[in-house]
Image (cartoon, rainbow, N blue to C red):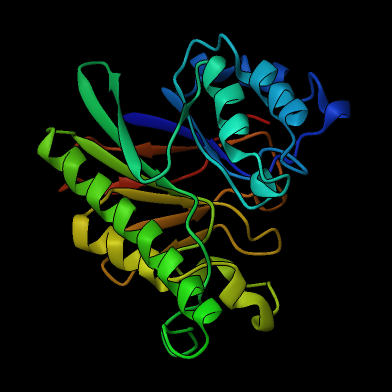
Amino acid sequence: MIRIAAVGDIHMGLDSKGVLRPAFETLPNCADLLLLAGDLTRHGTVEEARVVAEEVAGLPVPVVAVLGNHDHHDERPEEVTAALRDAGVRVLEGEGTVVEVDGARVGVAGTKGFGGGFVGRSGSEFGEPLMKEFIRYTRRCAEGLRTSLAELAEQGCDTRVALTHFAPVADTLAGEPLEIYPFLGSYLLAEAVDEAGADLAVHGHAHAGTEHGMTSGGVPVRNVAQPVIRKAFNVYHLKGGRSAETAAAASGSA
């Protein structure tokens, strides 16, 4: 059984030092790895990123992250990424990483993702150059996710997880205003997950959304935005192997 702890949208600032560290130090008792689903900072400053880095530095479980839109706000995502990586965090964007858990290979493919909407109410690559680039950027993110998941399968991973900030399905947006759905995620991310295959998809971003969802291909989706799960992290249990049933029951530590 693989135990995956996950949380997003922790929005840490300079006044957040030490807030999550006590909970994170309990991770070895309940989880094999920690996923951070973006929006780790409030304004994307390097100083805020260092606060996040201090919260997770030296943890005895691997930490894998993607950035969110807040982490891009100061337009220094490379420096934010560097600060996190200096603390041992595996920050992904269009790439994957493998975590060894008791002899099993757990692959995590990550991208921030972007918006565009969902089937029946989505944007398209038509019209003004800015609109075309909006959707093309999302498509590039989705393609990076698909490629990374496929590569992890080729590497013989027993379990694969898709980690994004933006939502791949509308299910987990229930509770958010319909008017902002196109800015919360894109069906292109779900298409990538279904095409390449995964055992679980984890995202954040939708603070007023719902935890549980599923892609049309049957992959469980979990919105782990902290305002949704209301704790330091949730833990999801996965049976090894893609053919096994996914048990995504939360047993997180507050």
